[in-house]
Image 1: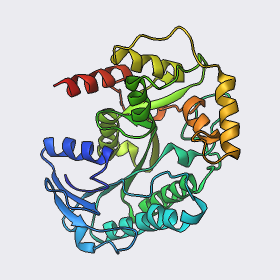
Image 2: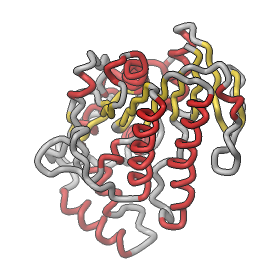
Image 3: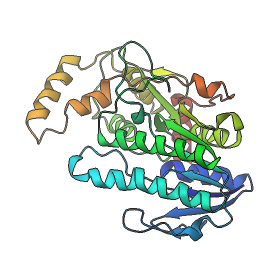
Image 4: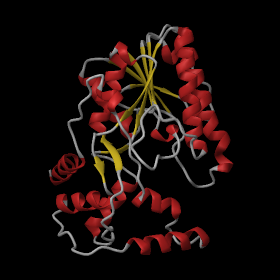
Length: 314
């Protein structure tokens, strides 16, 4: 495989590159900054045109670059979302077609599937209207990729990752882990919400599977570790791997609700309804479609975090 990876300097991209390299594949990345380990075409997708030479001799594209989910000043950044998530994706697949690329794998987001369902986990067949410009532009890019894939007779497939964990992770899970380690993160209430996640190592395997399996052509695939975690379970798993005693008490749910409502009104309180949903809401997804291709995750949150702690010790 001669592969081009966009977003290769990111968390998921670095794992994908490592896996491809270990398999003996020829690699090139498209990124804003050079990568000393791989041939790099330096290109800022926000301000520069994708050089067609980036796809010379390439047969497979893994497209991860885009504008990430950012709740700050979203309305002011709508043009950036559209430029990076939609326009750059369309331009890339068109160049790929002109260069004879055979496979185009787009790493999207579960946010493209729209608002959560209240009665069950969402599947790829549930197409609710995305809540924000991030989800809307991801959905639009997906539809463009599928349409152009049919037009170009190119193998295209879309992966929608859930929340990704693993060594090097950032964001809310990392913040929570550090907070528990530091003793300042509050014991979460024992509620029965459901959250889907996936280990970055398993996500890479899912990405490679839909690239290689011809049955995946033209499909959208949600990727999870096939387990539904409650927020309290996540908290207790983190306590366990950090060798912290699990408190026999918890902060009542109404306290989080009250603080979130105050945060919606008072700007300097760093907790809002959005924060509440991210911490205590449900985001549950089904990956039965991916399982039909033979995908079997090897990791869960406990195993992955244990590996992370062991790595840090050594």
